[in-house]
Amino acid sequence: MAGRKIYQSGLRYKIAQLCLRLLYGRKWHYISPWKHGSAAASVVLTYEGKVLYARRRGNIEHPEKLSLFGGHLDFELPETMEECAHREVKEEAGIDIDISRINLDSLLTLNRIVGEDMLDAEDVSKIVCFYHYELSKEELDNVQDSDESYGHQLYTEEEIDSLFEQGELAFNDHYETTKLTFKKLKSS
Image 1 (cartoon, rainbow, N blue to C red):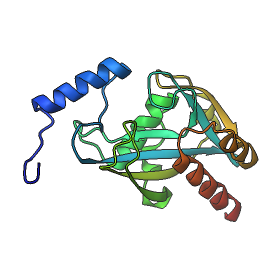
Image 2 (cartoon, rainbow, N blue to C red):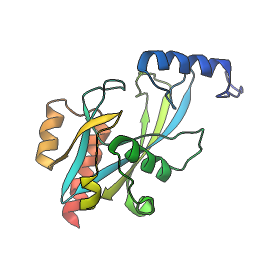
Image 3 (tube, rainbow, N blue to C red):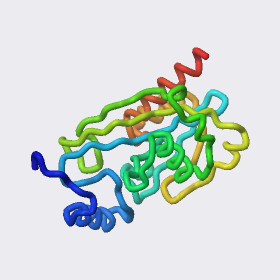
Image 4 (tube, rainbow, N blue to C red):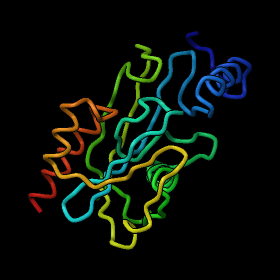
């Protein structure tokens, strides 16, 4: 494979996407059967010192577990990390947050995850940007269930700790970033 360029329009990519559509009922922007890297953006939505989480629907990885809002960049658009974060919040929470407030000033952390995706491939590298966004009352009131998530609820730090201990969170990096968010909220 070294030196060969992989095109997303190639037969190998199309076959991988077809298999994943059959298995999971939707296209995956970051899954492929060859070594690859991917980029994702997530948003920690807060309101009055609490963090908003939602349950993941059964048609995506870690069904019924709680997670923050985010996903992988759509390379077909193409989009920036900020645009990806904005799109994912709209898809998963049904709200149109102010994209101008998703920027480097709101960047919480930048994580590099190696070998952790739904296929548990060891040759995968993923970069995730986590942004912080304080919801207005109007935005919070407009949050709604979607095809990807449901049961949106605000949680305190103690509740998140308990849910993490019970194995209710979909991703460890969401927990770590939520803890960082609570620390940031307490210091401001």
